[in-house]
Image (cartoon, rainbow, N blue to C red):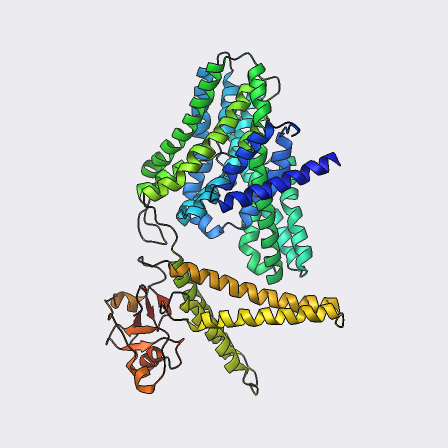
Length: 620
């Protein structure tokens, strides 16, 4: 009962602390560390000793898997050079640099032990960085590189740590270091691929979303254990399995299974990630007490901890600039067409916050190692110091450097374009099918797909003081759903209908309402954003018809002549004709294209800056 009570209390503090941090707009990881440090000194709070087994076996596999299945394999592959330079090159560089520093500052410490603490503090944890980065709107490429780095750098650091410890015991030769790393990485990737193949084949025969999700709970632990037993890297195996399963999920899983797995793993990651930071703070009291009872002077302890923290920050910044200008020599970003500026590189170097893996790896150092308590404090200082110094200053730096955040309006434009392309493929398939349409199914399908596409385009913003048709639909339908739910609940209360039937009906209403809520939230976010950058695909017609300044007060003369009301206006870039969009009753812009075959239109609405090609279904 005592253990159960402590676990429940831990969960409550994590959830309450996270909710409070979100409400006051303070990074949750930093707030939970503060709560943990304060709690460690309160009477009645039990002393919590993290062990390497709890973190490396209990927490690390699910955290890695949850991150891997949500990471785009396409983006990972596009940035693989940067990710490998950080997850391998930077870890080795930091290990050597910190090792030299600690060997100089701590008298009598062996080289193997100095390199061990270097390996301990080398791998950053992207949980805090990406949490802060998404909240403040760091460029997606930076977030992708940080996530990819965090998936692999733990493997490099743990191999380096075990090699250093084995060297201290006289059990390793220098030439075997590279061999061990290759065996760990290649072997881990191979095992991860084998597990992926097995699970993917199994999922082809599993249609129950509950069973499918339950299988996913076993995958990270099974993969990690198999790989470690085979003397490979469990970290690399879990990452490889998660990346491949996430990439192939639309093919090997049903839609219900994908939704269930995604929501369950988001919940697991949310709880575990925040619990980790609270546990880090709870280590403060006993680590400081052990250092106080040790034989090293306070001045030397402060010097070792402070200079190691400074070196961990500086070495990362030095490496990212070295790698950028001497090793990578970056070309244009494939999504923007521009070479990333130096500010991107600096933010990538500054977002090197350490996490629980650093603290857990420190416990791998043998208990009889000289100055072990000081080395544990060094690890704690680097974790807490980087989280607070870099974590708190990262938003300020992003604003000062004017780093462009992801643009919701660009996302809406890209979403509408992709839906348009998907609809084009769907209609093509529909024409190929042979069926007897005596009930007007074709017209119904066409109407529903067009409504979906029109709603996507309307999210770009039509007239500021006028409800778009999709907005009116959302508002009215939500009112209707509330009335429908109230009636269903009254039927449930009467007990005249089976509870399973009532639950099914409520579930249907919930799915529809959630979709409407998402579209409404996205539309509200887009209202405050104006797109100024080029996005989407291109084609010969878009290149041939550049953007022009539209009229200040455009009107659809066809609508005025016919007595109809338009929703939004588009301008033909060949003849200047102003016509209403497809969400309008008469669709005069599209009618103008069908009559004259002028291929490109431009939005004539204020604040919108995009063009559309009728021939190629491309947007700019």
